[in-house]
Length: 136
Image 1 (tube, one colour):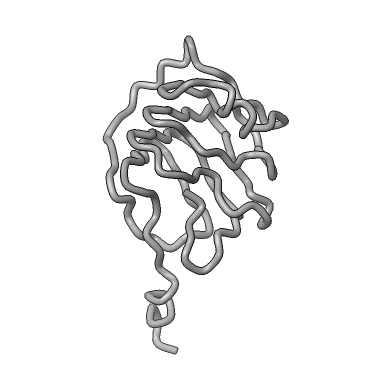
Image 2 (image 1 turned 180 degrees about the vertical axis):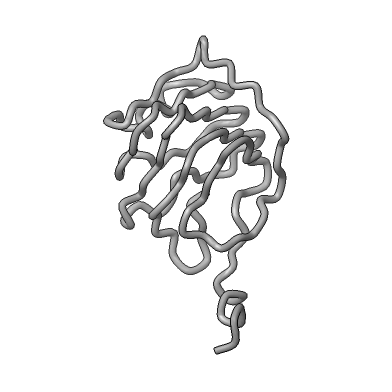
């Protein structure tokens, strides 16, 4: 097969309308398709942020807070425990080394139709979104 020919079929759009991927967001294992909107810089004021640790149930943490909350995704690998439906205006700031790992069994890291959601400095890898899906 000629280089690059089979890749076109596997490309998927990453992100959803209203999701801003900023800073050092790394999507590993995904085709290299640019996100729909990329902000140059995000001010992640973590002073009042709600922490989500590698051992926390991220869904419960996010569900327990109102729209517009800033979350600090703590450094380390969040293995199989990070699949959330953000609310409008939520911000997810990753500490150095924050890795969201779906363990090849979770379908998404971020889902739903919320607008103005910002992701900054997180690595998203090994999610299993299916043929027409994406981890974000």
